[in-house]
Image (cartoon, rainbow, N blue to C red; front, side, top):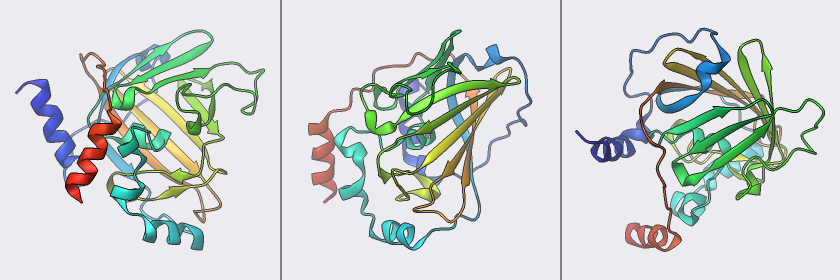
Length: 232
């Protein structure tokens, strides 16, 4: 089966995270350099209990995918949404002063400074082409890489899986923790949004290292709009 066929199958079953399980090891802390490489997600876990505030409940109840999913405008919904899309790979590159993450999905190119003198308010936009995805700062805690993000715009947090249609407010802050061991990596994203959720919740993803090239996604608003019209 070639890569295109694999991509198609994953897109079809991707929203059904949790209906299948893959044998993946527990991620142990290893070398920071293990984080470098190209990664493909193989497993996702979300907090079993996600407490919604009245505002959050209203947002979830009123969500209409073909109307409200910003991906149909070639605009990635959020950082979390980019991470949880189950098929396209992404690449991590480490430098002394920054971390670069190139996602195939929506051609998102993220740059995270490693500068202890910066505050989140002073940090550059984490994705220059999409300022709605906020500002990020990274640091190391032992062999784990930690990235904090603030300043994301209010909108849709996720469009896939058990949290499809869940919202985010402009007050949301996220913390991502990356740990890797050989050919496996775990990313735990902690979401803190007091407007929509009664307490923070986690999305945990396991990735496997792959020998793929990160290709151009090439989203077309015209083609995405045609898909919306066809489904309507």
